[in-house]
Amino acid sequence: NQIKLVVNSIIACRLDYCNALYFGINEQLLKQLQLIQNAAAKAVVGLYKHDHLGDTLKELHWLPVQFRVQFKILLIVYKCLNGMAPEYLVSMFKYLSLGYKYSHLCTVKPQNFPTALSLVFNRIQVRYLYQRSR
Image (cartoon, rainbow, N blue to C red; front, side, top):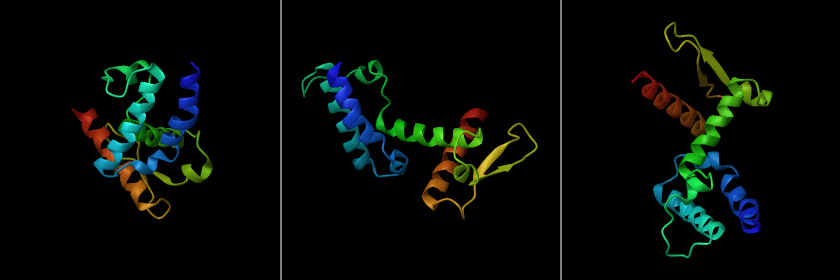
């Protein structure tokens, strides 16, 4: 239990710090971050270096790095849309009324948001709408 506490306080918090900026990085860097998380999970569970990880991440309730990044971005957007985020973040969104089943979509005002994060939000929104329409 102490190892899990140490790993969460040192490694997991470093992986989560500004991880929204990891969206769109190349596969090699993402793989390196995933290897760090895998090593941390093995340390918590007590596996050796060459042991198979299996469902250990699920047992620890840890998302893989790629999904942690997406989750963080979507959590920020959710908080902005539901008034739980600071005003400076909420003011960066504008709502669109399209008049059909997706009546309250939102986009990011490009002048207020860095270009990369604007692209991230709009890309995730398009994927979400595509998946919902199926």
